Length: 211
Image: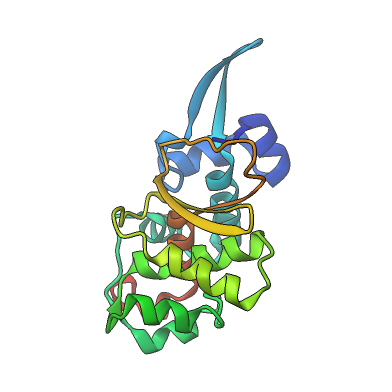
């Protein structure tokens, strides 16, 4: 797991120590993301880099639009919106439109829950991170990612990686770090929970239960 220190986090994002711990108290940042580790200066706090940075940016972008209570509700994985019709997926800009036909063909549902939307967004983000431009490779990548059905939880990380000329997908729990062998140099981990949080905030109108 790639970690970022508290000092580095505050420097990169421009937030204060007080803001960070207020957001923790308000449950905007999960307590389990605060990881204590020994260092040469004593104990230091670290965070999972791929989770904390997008979460802080989401809070900063939306803290003037919503109260901290509203943000906490939207960011909580326990606050799941209602199902939405498949036709509404085209409204979600974060889902790559060229991947949508492949996704819908292989998932084949009349309505989709928040995990589905977050996973489709994570697939699109990871494909962009890997700079996959070949249309056939993008379709194969999407097909393999949506075929993972054993771990339908928001607190997960979707990882797309390339081994040789072949792309693969893996879904793992947020708190379960993994390591890949040194021959795999192209890797794109994306937090499904952060995709879900971004969708709930940006497309609040699609989910009446959040109003």
